Image 1 (cartoon, rainbow, N blue to C red):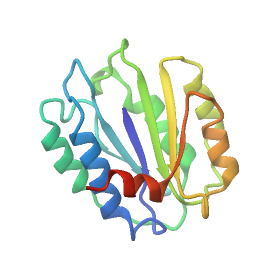
Image 2 (cartoon, helix red, strand yellow):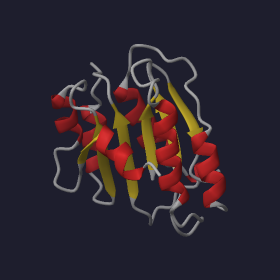
Image 3 (cartoon, rainbow, N blue to C red):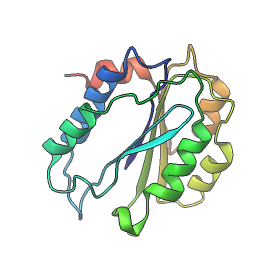
Length: 171
């Protein structure tokens, strides 16, 4: 599973809380090379791979701490969702980073800001394999609803408002 998290100027006020929520969630999973592996990508106009799938395969609590400590490197006011999806799909799930061909691939997009680069073509590529699942968590007040629909047009996928996600998982 790879979390694709917006880390722009628009999400800077909730970034720390969001990382805590994602860290708590990842820390509650059964992490190992034969169970769940977690990667984390943050993006604004640049994509940063913060955690690779095989970085924290030995300890859920270490993974939780690593995610919670992720900061926003540049906090640009522009975002490029297409590049973030492209990076997750083509670069995160590689053998050298811990990919297992028998595992399901979960892409969890957490975004708030409108992106003119929707990533629709990459989302379609992700959907071609039935073992891939794409979930989106966003703030509908700010994010273009069309983008959320492009990313989550399939019944296998879910759209969850970002505030409800934080309130549900924030411990």
